Image (tube, rainbow, N blue to C red):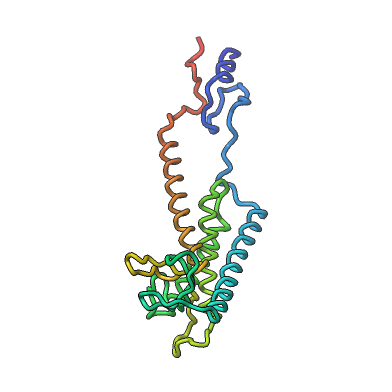
Length: 237
């Protein structure tokens, strides 16, 4: 028995769920069970709330500040007929745009469905954020960014009514002001805002978290199985 326990204690590391032989103590080198599936703490909930609130405030402030600035700024008309305020050369500037649709103007003709989808997405994302397990910071960061972006744009739909709001529309437009222009192509990338940037970055992080998680699962599947409770050196003679 003593030799068997000695071999157990001197063995290479094995998964945490492997039990020692009967009568032998657990090895000090045995890894502790992973807590990646443990419920998130309240402190992390608070940090998520602060991050979401900060991003939403930044989005709404930037929209108001940019539109107020553009209303009085000396705009330059480019070769495509757009009035814009250049920031970095000709390729980056600010341009006032009211978007009644989603990205690239999609769903513009069905505003009720668009607002409904955004509302449902916010509820689902909020649940995912506060149920995200520990040890998945990339996944959680992606959800926080996407949730904050969706909330910022939904605020415009529900509470923002500009002076040139199109009559008959039940919801207000999203305020876009960041303009990227490609002079060689004479093409403007669709204007966007901070909320759209949060959603785009969050989507990339979500994809990366899936790839990283997939590789981790693939690696764990290739680990050799260990017979629980078996003697790693064979039966004692």
